[in-house]
Length: 282
Image 1 (cartoon, rainbow, N blue to C red):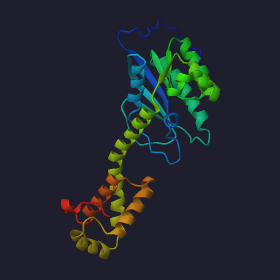
Image 2: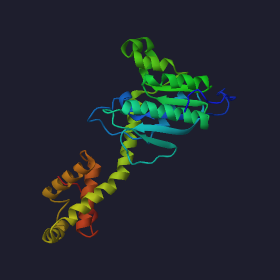
Image 3: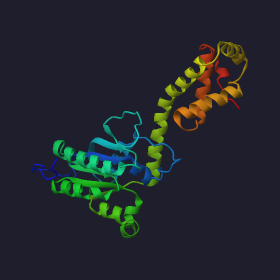
Image 4: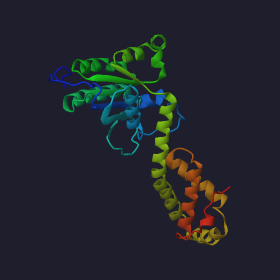
């Protein structure tokens, strides 16, 4: 699409009454970096709170906006579905992921500007290759806001330490400040909520596969022994934890361990598990 073919139209900016119409474009890798969750062993993050983060940032900037949709760009499919969000899957960052993100986001920005005609566009990215697209959007009468953390409040220092990011931020009509700590909490809390709903099915699948692979004599032995035990035998506990860690690529938290052991007992005993028996193994 030619970036210079958007039709001229009358546009009403937010003037303090009513709501402006906003669309957000969020690079999830940028959000991870912004709040310090981009390390190899960093906690997982979720898109669940992205819309709330954007709306809160707009509110803090005194922009009374209705967020129509958020486009989230990520290199992994989280298998989740959230209202008013569209997930764009990209190549891994170590290939051509960054360039792919810029191209995809630029194309989406121009398509949304032409089709939905929002009053406000919020961009969460630090890639200065978006500057040209931002300039075109501004010429079309769209207010462009960029999401950043507290460092944007000291622009001279930021220009010295990260000139490319500073140059991009200076192109925006508004710089929406989010506290890195608050952002990290929102993204991590959303991830925990999603994991609690997703992992129950994953844990059950691990338990079912383990049970179906046991010889019949071992199944019979467990049916006899488990009623007298609190929890599950240590060797069984270690095996289930190992299998689950391989399935979800991380260690389980205490809530998940308890749930895993409960499911193992239910499967082995045919759902006849007393409440007192469902306890964590030492």
